[in-house]
Length: 401
Image 1: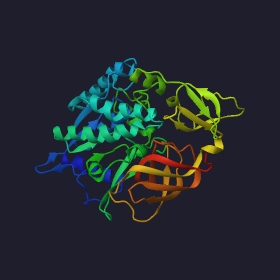
Image 2: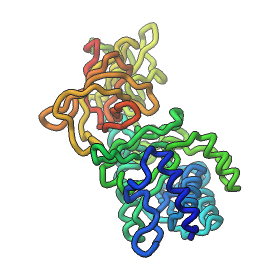
Image 3: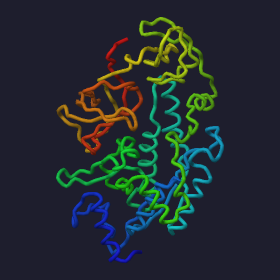
Image 4: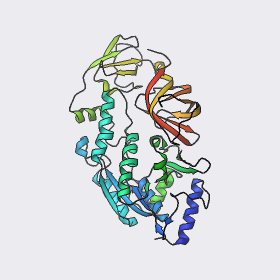
C-alpha cells in the first residue's frame, strides 16, 4: 500500500486532470473507505499498451488492482491464425507479464458465449438484413460494461477500469456523471461508449482520457513495459483482414447468392456477387453497364438487389435513430441543438435533435452528410460532452429514389 503522503498528491493530480475540486470527491476518487482500505479496481487488459498504462495509473493512485483479459473467441472460430487477432496467446501472455511486473492478480475470463451471441451473431444477422453493424459498440455495451461488471462484483471490485481515450466527470450542478471526448482527438473513443448509464459511469474510470497516444507510449517506455511499442489492435478484432464477406460465408457455411444491381429508377444495370458484400456509400466491386462512378445507395435483401447511383444521391440531412440512450438518464422535452457524427471519427456536424413520442430521436443536420447508413450509430455532443446516441434505422435522402 502506498503511504498516505503519496496518496494525497495523487488525488490532487487526478482532480486537476478531471476538473474536480478538493474535498468534493465522488466515490470513484476516494482512495480509502472504512479502515483505510484501498478500493478495488478491475482493469480490463487486452495485452496492449493502453490498458497496461491504465493499470500503471491505478497502481500509482493507490488502488487494489486486479487485471482481467476477456477471452472472446477461439481463433479457429473465425478461421484466423493464432497471432493475427486479439485474444491470441501472445496478448494474454503480455497482459499476464504486465500484471506480474506491477504485482497484482490476473485472470482470464471466458466470455465466448456472450460474445458470439451479442456481437458475432448480431454482426452476421445485420449484414444478412442489409444493415451495416457496429460491433465495437456492441462489444463495449454488452461485454466490457455489462458482463465484465458482473465479474467485477464477483471479485469484490468496486470499479471497472479500461484503456479508452475518453473522460468521465461528475457535474456538481446537475448531480450527474458526464462522458466527455478524450483530449486526443485522433484517438477519441467516446463514440463507442454512448450507451453508458449513470450507474456505469459512477463505477468506471478512464484514466487515459487526459493524455495523447504519444504520452501514453512514453509512460509505457518509462515504466519499461514490454508492449510499449506494440501496434494498436484492429477495429473489428474478429475480422483483422477486413474481409467481412469471407467471415460471414465461413461463419454461416453459406455462399452469397448473385443478384441484380438496379439504378434509381429500378432498371437492371448489372449483376452483383452477393448483397451483403456491400454497404451504403461503397464504390469498390460495382460493375455496371453504365459510364461513370457508381456507389451503393440501398441494399434490398428481400429481393437480393442493390441500388446504385451517383455520389450526389448519397447525401442526407435527416435520420431517425432507435434504441437511444441519453447519458443523463433524461431525454430532453424540447428540440435541442447538437453536434453529431454518424460514423466513428467522422467530423462533427451541427443540427437539431427531437425526441419522438415513441422515444426514437429525429435528427436534422444543418448540412448534408454523405452515406448515412442503417445500423451505424449516431452520437450527439454538446461541446466535449456526449449527450447520447442510438442506432440509425431510417434516413431521408436529398434525392429520393
